[in-house]
Image (tube, rainbow, N blue to C red):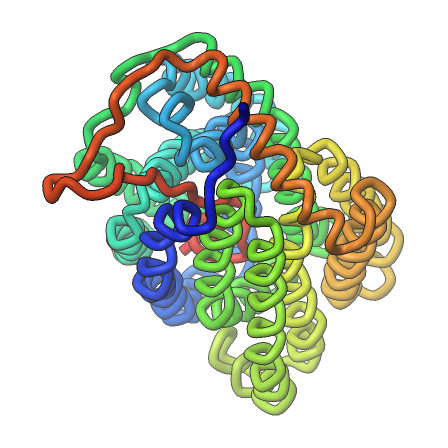
Length: 479
């Protein structure tokens, strides 16, 4: 007879995650707060010493590198997080050649992508070479951070992210002062910092990575992860194609100003809201994997309500302080730049909220639906920018960003309703899936004694962590 876990067993296995959630939220907050503070302080310095055009070139290079990294390594990162609580499919079962193959593919994809997106934007070919190197460096750094997150190393994630931000700004500033190279200095600083923190992060990883390499498990990772890789790529295009289009259609200087306002507003918002998103996802996934869909639903809804409550005073602050913020960033008053703040703040919040809104599709393995939804929003965003940018300038990009984020939320809700039913039915699927999964494991898993702790208590419970989605800051931001 199929044995389902009792309520006390579920509570015991979820309890470590519940206890660690506040601590993880604090450290994830540090991983956002330190880069945000450094970034907000660095952007005015870079714009004043390198110019808005150089910052625009750099921002386009970084956005291109992020798109490449998501396309080539997204499947690996998402699967590492998705299966981190599964003893049979976690990082230890990853095939040794998967990371090396991913990096090789990154180089092959980065060369044509960077050439098409950036060639002709800067007369010096060193800029193009550095942009290709940045795509590889971003991929390496994101893989290390994801593996640390999969191992529930929130403190190490904060260390790596903070070190990356500090070194990026320090190296870029030093190169800028020493060479006066502009965009090349900013890109070169990012490349050096990402490679250094990759080496540091690799040394802090717990042993066990690929210790029992399995081609079968790696294929399972790929079958799950490739739709999410495309989702991440399309989402990155949705978030960051605007600065590339502004650069082509309006000018590099306008792209630099737009990027500065975009980066500053999303960083501030991420510091205040995104740590709650990351911490709540751990709780949602823990409850879901323990066949407690109702508690997963409650945790997800509670996170949305808390984020909304925190956002309201931030929105009021943005309304009254947008003028001083713009003057701080670009060194002068600019009514056009001030008009960007409100739509970018609201759009960024809606995007962060979508990470909770589409969680029910994630846990029900409806990643292809997510990919279709974000592709539709990206198409709307790009077409809107192509039509409106020549006439209305960067303000059009800010409002299309908000519109695309709102459309994604609507499509997510409609998709969940049509495919999974009402709210309770959607989250109730967890009990059925958990029972089916346990039944398969009972039939196929060899009998073995459970590992007990030193005190002779209950077996240790491996805790799952949430899948990572593109956030507006952190390792998906330039500094």
